[in-house]
Image (cartoon, rainbow over all chains, first blue to last red; front, side, top):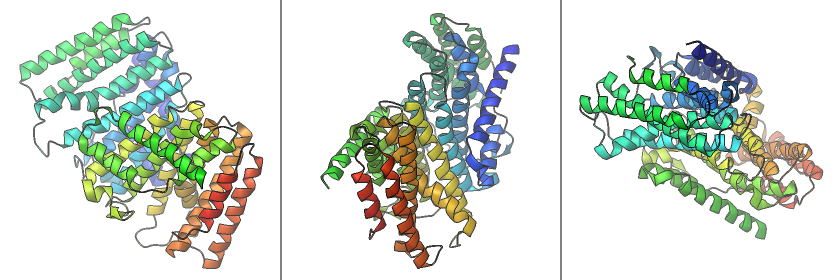
Length: 265
Length: 265
């Protein structure tokens, strides 16, 4: 899609700017390098795309949401760095390359994640309007994603997630960042309460669909396969249905929901 | 001082509110508990006091700065949790009690720190005015304090800090949070450019004096004792001199600078 390319250029420019202007003196070099390595390592930028498209759906321009789009990607990448740590998932690889701690050591990985989170908020504060709402949204998501991760770790290595934890973990650990992306985009695009509510409904369902599809691809769904497939359909339909309440062009968000539900990786 | 008591009440109320309302569902319990344990563990609340007094010095009221004061203390406490981790200073004790990782495990400590940082920004976004400036200030400090920590870790265990790193580490790792406290207070109290600049000058010198005095108390100054004593005097005087440019009552900030320079612990 032509729009995807244009949106990705906005996102990469905002990320590049954050990772230079946002790191005064670029010192120490190893910290700057580890942060850039983590963020540059081939993510699909789904959350920032949702953020830009959220601004458009709310009636604004994609450019309005460049800063919160970069912010949500920085925050997302910090969570990946910390998830990979030996004390957590102990993953030495991420996206086909050494994980940050495997490459730069544990202390530098913890600290690069910490700095990325701070930078995310600094960048969100540069949004062109509604900064209090945008930062509060990112803050709630930043707490929620940790709540989800702690609950998720509670199952222990290789253990199954207890039934009553599944919804909590999926909503906090996965959907929360999609919600923040869409809602921040809506605020940046000048949306009011009605638009924000619709974007929230879209994104929580998109996030759940994304997670259920992830489970199918990984073959580790907590539910039988048929039930999970049905859940992908239901949440994708609910996401698309929420778009009817938005005044701007929602075709990008609709196509994204359909594409994520049928993705192969 | 009567004022200290009143200020501390404002700070504790704001922290208590953040650590309940800011943790939706208070789930998982272990995360909530670890966060409260870290923040409640007997800190002197110097940075939040500087924040409240900064609002007063800028011409506002101490209450205006309750949110940024809580935010800087949350951020400070997250840095302590992460500094104590096995991959960094490997400290099992903090303020006479088990450190967070020693009590709750490494993963929970990393995550409790992460959530405290997010919560700090969420709380800062609730400031009554100048939210973009306040959050940007906290964001810059959040990045800076990590830059200082990475540089500090670069010396290796037991090693001395190279001469050219001392100023960088002291400014980023210690002074940066004092600066953020004072400047956020100034913004919350309605200060303009002149007041913010004076508070910044006060706080960077206060932070350096605090660190030099710390070195004297710990007996690990990078300089000869006489030089360090002289540096404490010089920076304390510079901090106090900066207060002349402020329109509000600066007696609290002046007394604090004098007290920190002569402290015994």
